[in-house]
Image (cartoon, rainbow, N blue to C red):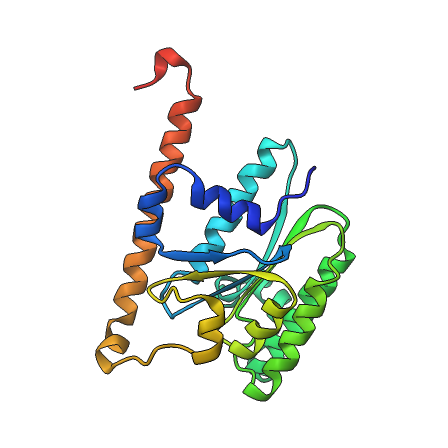
Length: 241
């Protein structure tokens, strides 16, 4: 199977049908780096970072299927961290017996080690690998992730990192990763790195949960519409509505 990178996948989504509607549902600003296999995803809370990951997963799988192949997407983030069952325990261990930060660091390292041991086409996505980790470690995490992004195994077609940490982001961008900003704050990544997030009010804080639910609902409806359109276009001519 040919190389399918996060940069290609996001461009496919961003430049496809209903581009204006997609931007209304999930505002985004993409800046291409020198390493097409590495992608940094940043943005405000409830801005749609996890939804951007969901889009990358879905579109990458669709492209792989068109190629007649299969792409494994190892998505290690909060969706798995808060889930119940053996899979969550296998990936993250028991946070009741060790610090959240240590769990985050160990999990990121394991994800990278698993990627290096894989010989079939795959992506590795680390969603907020710095949860619970003190600021003093962030630059080191960024350097570790940047080093990995610069020496990806040929079978690792994509490596994406979602983070709020500027220290982590700065190292990954410096290593050539593309940048995807999502949500209401679409400043270029270098401007965000220089000045940080915009201050919020108490009203913004209280409205946060409602904004997150609203964005997720809109993206779900958009996915359903696109799926229906694909199904319709694939149907025999006489059966189309």
